Image (cartoon, rainbow, N blue to C red; front, side):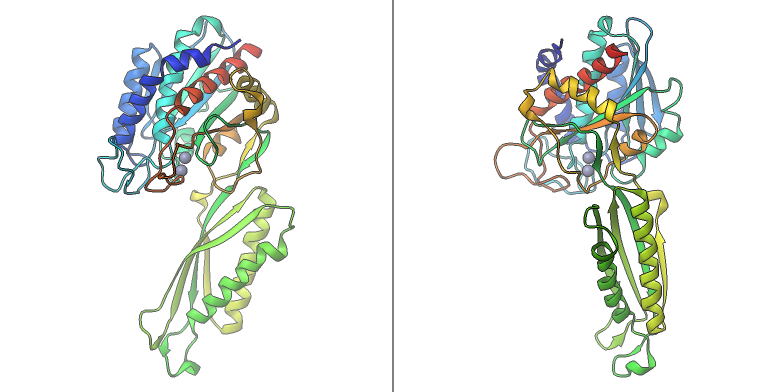
Length: 393
Ligand SMILES: [Zn+2]
Ligand SMILES: [Zn+2]
């Protein structure tokens, strides 16, 4: 069926040029003004209906097919990270402390390419394609913002697809699977309240450092002792702050951490056990505590719809050798495409984009880079997924 790969290969120099331009001018979440303007300009030139300012800096382009039919949403994220780039690339970031270190520069370029591929082939497919260029994926709530701004209404999408360039995998490998792919993420804060005093007179104090140390130990036992070994969950405490001086017993300790889960009941269980453990340990010492789970930062798990995973797989099979289409154990990082996938049946896929050589770093590293040959592969795959869904209906 598909010549999307040939069409996308012909676009490769353009895709690379767009990607390098976005890479050189990275913008943090909800500040993607320049990026969004480039996207909107391109979509307008292709004749799409364009809505800007969706969820502050998002852009939506609507492309009508040759005859009436269902609506498919394709989502691309645009934001960079607060990282100082050290790739030494000729098109490295010109904004100190801001870098495209996750590949969203590539995703934005891919989206522009997909718009072009589908616009030039619109005579062959029915229905409607809604291209969403989403702001602020990196933990800032961009998906929620565009949903609150109505991106899933008028027209309501019948299916949703998205893709991440994925460096842990070699170029051209595609992960397409039904069910869980990426974990839910929570950000929690813990404060221990003791009673400060002289380091030589502990009997007059409640040592917040000691209570925090016991709490850190006990909290790490929850996953190993209260959760089935068949269930995936991670609890990590990334920050512990207490005390100011060597001879002073600290009055307070602050901790922050992340919890990663797949099943909401497991999440509820762990959060409840965390509260019980903190209550018990602080009571034993006569200390107090505050346990806060930041609900606005919660990201649900990425769970692919089985029927949509089948559509995505069928599309991948028209472009890639069967041996390159694979499934993986679910990964513990999170991704806010899940906010869309829990409202619209859809599928999130990963495309291997590891660059050659060993000088590059992993995602979110100052030396992160992608293999640019992945750009046309990704554009072809996204176009083919939309085509496959629309032409099946
Ligand atoms: Zn990222
Ligand atoms: Zn990312």
